[in-house]
Image (cartoon, rainbow, N blue to C red; front, side, top):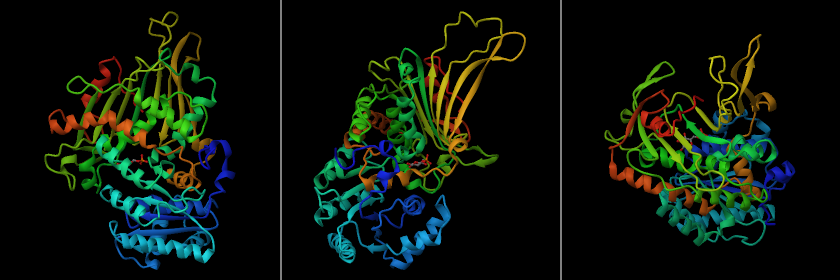
Length: 512
Ligand code: BG6
């Protein structure tokens, strides 16, 4: 089996300790993601002794920054954003191995300079290191970076040997089917698929990984996991934050591209896919692609399978909150959606007739991501009528965040001398059982890319299958402009059109 294709669940941490000598090069080193997520992730891996002894971090960006200044920026980022405080020993070990190279993204000589910098590191330690390139820039420069990694020989370095070059590509992976296809082609002109790690940070979340364990390691769930027992599935990815200072990006994106096409669809795929034949990366990704391909094209227009809306002024946590159109950097007549709801039909043996409802939005009532599996009601013969019996459908819900855990709604007899029933909730909480210092998604993902495990990354065909589904929706919305755009008050659970998607089948959104 390839170096890497085994899933860490099989092996535990000992496998992680085997990460080969590595240099991680971050393109976009002075960007927000680098400070908030990537530097803290590397630092915490260092804290946990999960970095190889020969580990180097190189920041790359257009802005000239002296090495010392880059190290100072990195330590500030750790102080501000790391889940652990800065530990002087851990940081000084890492700081000694941190440097910065300035250069344009479309300048081949700058990539030659980067190659020479890495060669020099190798010369100093007297051995080869694998090169892990992390593209964390705006998407407009993905292509020049990839092409220059090819032209400078960096992409092919050691290819075929266990410690070859690899590339991590941040989202967004294209903006529609055609652009994602073009990006895949550029990548493949330079890298082989096994060198490529397309990020969806939701896959790095503990609870998302736990979905496979819950489904396939517990004998009680899988026999019920189908259209005979499940009535509907609801996936909510709600955020309290608004568009913040990201208006420029968000206006080009919108909720469907930013959250649904990638993060939410990963939750759908892991919830609904067939059991993989093994836990290796390709088996899992094959099943996800099969599932995505079984989803029916979405009905567009009034009464169809999609709804979109923008947040209007409202109240968040007792304070007045602006509407989307009043936010900084947003066009006064913007047709960008901040909320989307989708009704999916999966046309396969397991799921035919079971609607999957998805919704995601900014400025919603509460930050919560959950997957709720609503089971069918029991036959109403025994507990019916008379008002004494409050019977709810059983619901199994995976709390992806916050309050990570799992809960199950069961019907129970209320204590007392007569027979009354009431639904109760059985809860499992990660923090209570395992403590609360869970690794961040990016820690897992950077480590997995280092050791070469692609399980928690998106394969090229997987990205295309999801774009295939949503590109017609994006095209129809672009053609309609603001027509059909609903509104919801900031701080609410979304617009009426989102509710109407469910009402058609007699369903309502669950209050998470
Ligand atoms: C990012 C989106 O991918 O995910 C953001 O671009 C969003 O708009 C973020 O806020 C949500 O991630 P998380 O981990 O906070 O749920």
